[in-house]
Image (cartoon, rainbow, N blue to C red; front, side, top):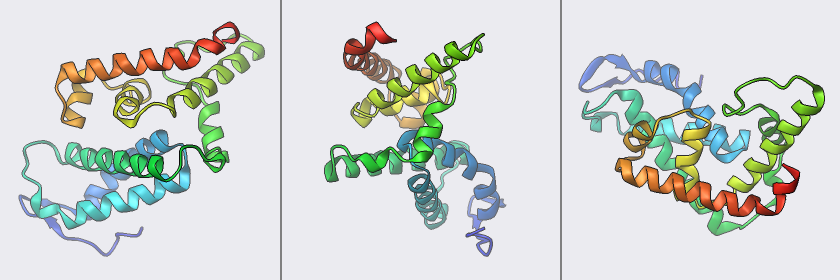
Amino acid sequence: MMYAHMTARVEKNPLMTFDEIYEANAGRILNLAYRMTGRETLARDIVQDVFLKVYQNMENFREESQISTWVYRIALNHIINVLKKEKRLRFFDDRAENSAYRRLAETESVWESEAPRTADRRLEQQEREKLIRAMMEKLNPKYRIPLLLYRYEEMSYQEIAEKLGLSLSAVETRIYRARKKLADYLKPWLPYI
């Protein structure tokens, strides 16, 4: 582990070391980064950056929330910044369609409530999910992030509001607008999905 030698204690919670914070949160942050970016290497880089920020700012943790919420918020902010920076650097890059993203797109989403009965139906669901994920990538991060948290992280609107530091009505509005825009992107594909 990259951070094995770091045993600094959270100032207001002397029972929790950085290693314990990392162990308790790294998997969830990696999963979030991977879902948001679709790229394994970038997701791993994000995890390192996030935990470097956590380590550097441990003394700033005010215990107004759980430490996992604080770490998650740092991660979300960092991911949003990475996505904004990437958007400025390139509008679309074929390299983003790497094998890790394809593997992720081939997995069933949490909205698929029951398994398909046949191989054909399973293939149709996988293709539909791939298309939805590709169209979601076109959304502005301001709208995509709340929708991804709702759809793939199975968070309630209230949880999303807390994680992003937004009002409940702002989350509702952003998810509504994301769905509306996503529906517009999917219109040409409706006969096929």
